[in-house]
Length: 243
Image 1 (cartoon, one colour):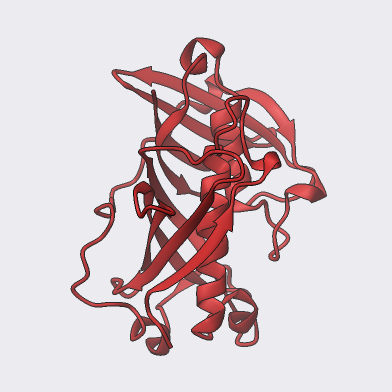
Image 2 (image 1 turned 90 degrees about the horizontal axis):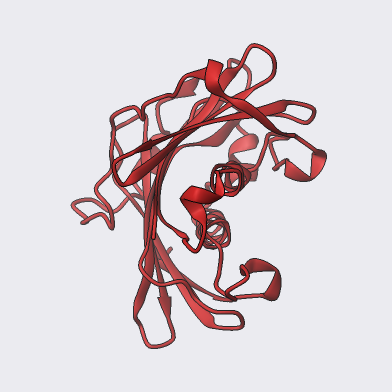
């Protein structure tokens, strides 16, 4: 079983913005798809974990984009699991074009969840042993919590539909990124694209939930937090950079 895995993609018309460049959420989808396929080859994808009453949950993801691929461009994602810390499993990603130029990179932090208790458990040893040890990360993992903004200053942006859900019947991880990058004031995003995002997932969201967003401009960064329903329960917090 190969611990380093490369899969090709082609940038489709529905994955680009008005500049015919892949959106940040499309790039994150490439990473997520590559991770899922590789995990399946290594025999620990989400459907295989379900057989043991466990599931994967994404805890954090940090993405940096240097160049966005264009519509119809052929690209490839290389991904590999790295040794975690017992509760968190790390996975690295690189996105390159046909020439081998690095377009984007990312690191994700995953946890294994007991489906009955809804609590994290230690990563099974057979999974931990597959992680590459002493590997240099594409981005050094940030283990500190990401600052949560004031829920009382949040505003309603959308209601979760069934099209937003994943195999766990929770909102797909990338949909959070769509909300974070797609509902900011034009003064922050006009003629710009998100070049970096660091997101921490705090709680799941399901169909029918009402989603609220709070944002704050701090130096060169735009912080964004997401909440759900009338109690404004936090579901994600992030730091974004725009160029």
